Image (cartoon, rainbow, N blue to C red; front, side, top):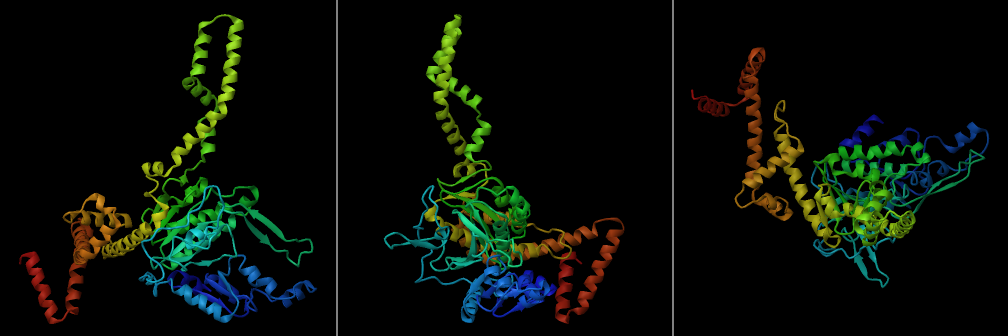
Length: 548
């Protein structure tokens, strides 16, 4: 069990359950995380139903499927996929493996999509405002009422959904973008049902059907999101999140069911992520409240970037109505009315000019009536004003998103962005490894490595700061400058070694004495391990460097 748990982070782990799995076997299935379960005669159980019946003294359960069949394990997220027979289960396992590198942190298996789909094509499916829709249509595309195919974000036919039986307010799976495998998470914007079966062992129990609103994280869907992120991380897949959450469900039952705990697991999963992560707010979607907290790119700035669909996406901690009720209360609206409305301004002048008590009362009554008639209009204006702070343009201006992207062109944009990020991360990894020589005196963070990479880019004749943001230019520069970049990485390694030796030998006191002695002894041992030719070359290097 311990080895299986450790293996999850070291290799790709998967269990295909084709028969009964009992006791420690059931735990091994869960510890391997990714599970494909056959729908018949393949229960995942801790104790057989006969033993439980004997323990309770009566025949409560009639089959093991009541305890650990797909109706239980597929619905609670232990089984990722449920398949009808052996062949379909093994086929699903092979299809899953096609998304994963052959070794951890290896090259992604890129598929040639010529003849299947085009890389640079528009996305034809677009959601309508205030209309619920299947979020899978964003990913896969769909047919319209006339039977015409409307393309989606990913390559046609490449999406493989997982965990679809559990926590249905979140959709997760794997797909390909221009042949490049990615993990994908999307928000279900329609109401879903969570069914808790009645336990035959409890005579008072009854099946509970819980309605779960769309665009909200519940305890089970938050856990599903965190589980998916961890699975994608250990599969070394880039990740895109189509975000449309108004926040977490914070009612008493959900707080008792640990929504806070599972929501924090999402942050933990993002912090540990090593591949590129894109958080994208699709058309007519929004991120609000606690959802913003767990999706903000600053959680792991070295890998995460946030984007929004141009024009229609919205983002902010408070919704416009809430912000208006806090920032623009009734008294503030009345002050604004008296500042802008000509009728009220004229009445204010009349009120100041008269001393007659009857006339003052009449004017005040007229002012009050005018304020009441204007209040609904000004309340709507206040909401619109607050909504202007949530637009993609405003989000870009305050630096919380990288760019507002036109939905129709987002497939092309993110394909080149992903290619650029994968190439950048590969070079960055080499730079970080180069800086970890010895004790790693000059250890680099991913952000520092990217900054050094940018300085190399700007040193190249003809390159400007604006070109650094152009993904195609960046990729072309990396391809043309491959030998130069390899030499730069080698030089970085050398600089780190030089800096470490210099710091040790000039530290002063006993540290310098012991350090210098250790360096000399290390050189002596290395010389003994060299052949004659290598020793001569090394001596020549010493003579040249030390001017002997």
